Image 1: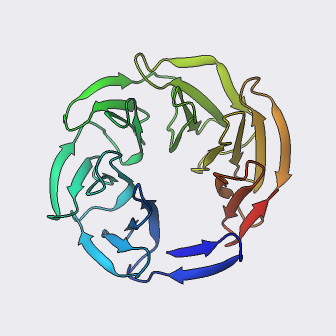
Image 2: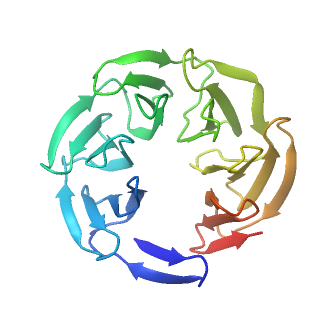
Length: 266
């Protein structure tokens, strides 16, 4: 894992400790620690400043996604290759809860409603499940024969919508909260993502949406009207896999691709 300075545009620190590629990294709520999960089947909790490993966790499965629980920095949840979501207490290293209703590896975990009282998960089984926190049975199934796998889910800054990268080359929108209904009129098309989990980034004011695609392009849409505003060629040698909007400077976007390059766009 590497931490970069945007201002100086250089790598500030490299954290070495995994024996295989890192799949996901998540900072805690105050930014003093982060947890990384890797294809070596281990999760490591790091101190950002000192670079020390504070804890190592494993259930002998490949972790695909990790998220800190919004109300407690000592608890994080992990989506695994054995179709389960497990919650760890980092102080004891023990698994405190298992959520086991998906039929394929878990791709995303998103906390919604009232500062994380509910959790939305998506999986390769083409289902989206909604869970009450700390209850191992889903309170809602979202499943439809026309649905495709959705390996990326991003919360809109208003916290009223979930934007999901559907592998039929479109971004679909669900209501976040109460009914979790599909917003049929709101869908973003014009990019090609089939087979790739390209990230979705939303501007801090919620007006613009951007995503990479499998051809190395970066596409911007207007959130309200769902029409394409800009399309750039961002990366070579494969997809533009990740995109992130700067939280303070609304005109700055970062992307990275399979060419091993991180780019900053104005």
